[in-house]
Amino acid sequence: DTGVSQDPRHKITKRGQNVTFRCDPISEHNRLYWYRQTLGQGPEFLTYFQNEAQLEKSRLLSDRFSAERPKGSFSTLEIQRTEQGDSAMYLCASSLRRGLANEKLFFGSGTQLSVL
Amino acid sequence: KQEVTQIPAALSVPEGENLVLNCSFTDSAIYNLQWFRQDPGKGLTSLLLIQSSQREQTSGRLNASLDKSSGRSTLYIAASQPGDSATYLCAVSPSGANSKLTFGKGITLSVRP
Image (cartoon, rainbow over all chains, first blue to last red; front, side, top):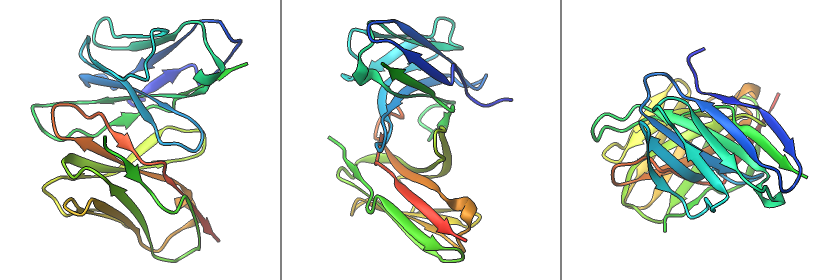
């Protein structure tokens, strides 16, 4: 399978616990994005990487959230001290950016987080 | 701040009907516009990408148009099928170096057999 894969697909946790999600992008893609989607809403941008560099973070990404892409391949998104408002689908996408050419984003199936 | 609107939120049509899904955006300074399909509990699949310099793109039974100056895009689906039932989202990319997409809330389409 050469698509974007995310693990786990579902995560149920208690309020206050830490959780970590993993995203494996399409292998040759240099850009990786994290989005969050709540029920009935479109995805909202959280952060993105070009290779291993984190280039932008949304104001939605509080201090409890941290994302890494240590070797420019897979990425992790960690949420510390989870709150019920963190319950959402966390989507990862990757793309191949060449110069200023338009890039198509390929999304994974997401990780559904439920905070009890 | 860019805002993307998709109305109505839901649509139900009989099989075989041709239909148009609308998308509007407030800031015309976009780099491109994409239409995505999302099945329940799943990720997004890119359907069509229209560059800001283009007017339309076609793929099979799908045709997307873009009128940047008026801040509108439409997705035309010909001869709809029950398998087209899904949520359709449009998203715009700002001018510049990244693809930080701003999404609409989507239109949930149901095609009745």
